[in-house]
Amino acid sequence: MAHGAPCRQRVILATAAAAALLGLAACSSSTGSGDGGAVEAAAAPQERATTTVPRRPATTTTTTLPPTTTTLPPTTTAAPTTTTTTLPPLPPSPAIEPIEAMAVPLSAIGSNSGDEAARAQQRLLDLGFWLEAADGQYGLTTRQAVMAFQKYVGLNASGSLDGETAAYLSNMTEQAYGRADAGTMVEIDKARQLLFMIVDGRTQWVFNTSTGSEVSYVEVNQKDPTVVERGDSITPAGLHRVNRERPQGWWEGDLGRIYRPKYFVGGVAVHGSSSVPNYPASHGCVRVTPQAMDFIWDAGLMPMSIPVWVHT
Image 1: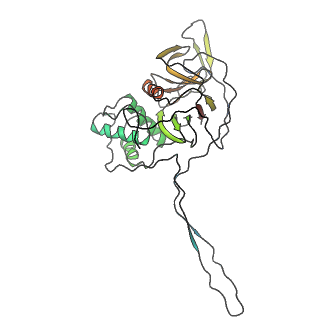
Image 2: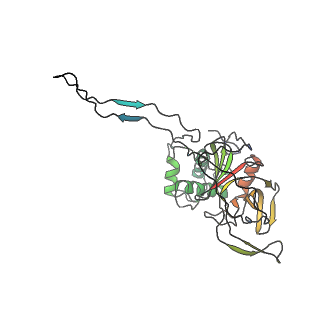
Image 3: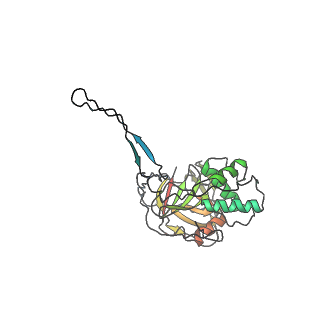
């Protein structure tokens, strides 16, 4: 697949149409003030989210019927027979795109820059993990993409290209995908700490993220030291929509600095942050790097009213 941005060309369809999610009930949770947004009233009542699990390409199935014995007139008995039926394969799910394993496997390079880093960067892009460029520089967005890949396959999310990560990355045979397989939306997986951009049922990009720590906090308001902020650091699960945004630069919020936020419930937003660790650490917001947030804005991936599905 061709990719967009300076890394690959990809057609990204950004639409505000609601996702048709089949089979999952959205649940609600108390809303904190995010990482830095003002404390606000809760958003409109939660919508009900449903989805179907993406289908993997089916394989040919062989069904063996039990032997059938038919008794004919006296002295004549038909011999048992076994019938084998081969079912035609189902078409591949549109949510999953196959990809070939690498002919020359990647080497374990740790966090070193160079030609092998450029190969790893291009492989991550081909699999759907966003980073700035396949330029051989093992910088912030490359570490974040490696971390996202490690979370996706269940490895230790160090952000370093060790031997096990290199082997998994070399031998992947399908692009990464979220749970949503219909519609256009932002999907936030709190269990894996990943953010998926879904366009027309296909996962376009995967980002490392850090959501609410779910630890109660009592902190002094950074804009008004006479005010004390209290909350539960929860990123509320359910189906929401982007309802407010700040397009320009850093904003000094009540609980810290946030970059170009896209709010989807109360003071909780997807926003750029100077710290996006491999674990949930925010006051409730959904953190990505400032570079990733610039890409999300520039590519039009989170327009107003786009659904935001948060699940565990």
